[in-house]
Length: 237
Ligand SMILES: Nc1ncnc2c1ncn2[C@@H]1O[C@H](COP(=O)(O)OP(=O)(O)O)[C@@H](O)[C@H]1O
Ligand SMILES: [Mg+2]
Image (cartoon, rainbow, N blue to C red):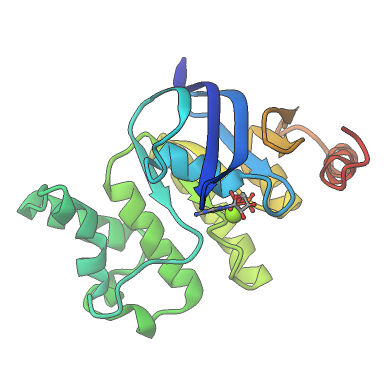
């Protein structure tokens, strides 16, 4: 079952009269519970696509049919003057859905993720990895079906990043979500996804697609990685 259906999406940025076309006639479907990653060279339009899906950019052509979505940007956007709990409750507050029940659920999530000691702490008292976990919990609490994650781990050190990749995968399965994950780390994409999409051309109008089976061994994965790299480098279009 499709949970997201993008048809003939076209989008450009308008700068002082000129029109910079970023996405042209792009179509894409996401299945329920499917996890996809998008990789591609810097500037190929990955963040633009996710911002359109998140509703941040909305002057596009084409159609987007979609279940509810929650967006988590690259940098954690926790407010330094709010405690962890207050930060987590923010989206509910904005939607005027903050209630005793919402607060209870936030606290139960923090417990599940072993962050309950930090409920009344401020973001600057937490490590980078913990802050990303808090941002992720906040994204989960919005109860959206599709998570849109734009390079959420790129600022973290390698060990924390691997920890969080495993943690993300476990939780995304546990909470029954679908995901679009943007990264420039091909190994991360191969580890996290059922399908990897590689930006092929500019403006973005098509992806090279790789279905990833959990049964693939290291040799097969390396083969795919090499092919993805050659597409990104423009050797294979
Ligand atoms: N707000 C903006 N206004 C004008 N141009 C933008 C804006 N945001 C991004 N761009 C341009 O759009 C192109 C794609 O950017 P982006 O989607 O951020 O790429 P990626 O995330 O794949 O690195 C880039 O050339 C970038 O300069
Ligand atoms: Mg980007």
